[in-house]
Image 1 (cartoon, rainbow, N blue to C red):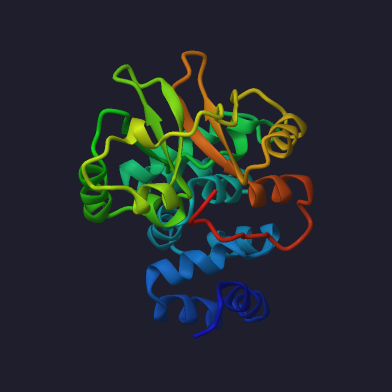
Image 2 (cartoon, rainbow, N blue to C red):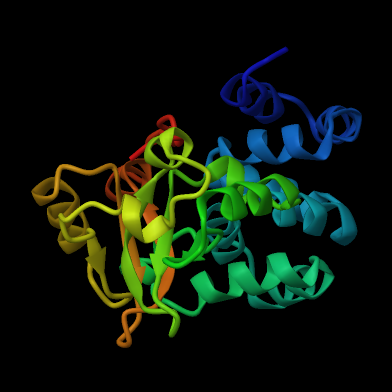
Length: 239
């Protein structure tokens, strides 16, 4: 099986008919992974040449920040048409990213994050994660743990979650070190500086009430700082 980057290279080299045929032969998740690796101009062409329903289905399977990047490159009329054809939950996550300038934290954050209350037990969260049908579990590297009002307490690494006793509460597992956070309007340099200062691989984006909105990974920052390079994707299981 070809890796996503290899599939992306192949899709870029094929003509319109051949690449549409290839895309239709792939599972939708594999196709979306490949599209995330394509160069922006090639992805724009592919979205234009696909049927609106097919293009919307690919975008719905992509990570919200990646789908937002793709939609920024098409004209406003097509962007709106594709958003309207996307599944509502996916469209909502992507629209949240599009509502921010792409040079800010809000414009590059991944809104498909896992949140949980600090009072929740490990067994409850693990069971909930197993039952989720979206991509948040596969792309997340941690859980944003909040209080009962939804305000961020701290980030919980998946490593700590899976090593914990089932009866422990999430709050018992949290580090005493403050979480790495930025606000949506922060510029890319501030996000990078926060990441480096805290020696972490992700930063949580919070609103003015300290409620988590999204997560920015190290590779997201590299993509933003090096837009002409092939996209970077680091392992995403642990922070």
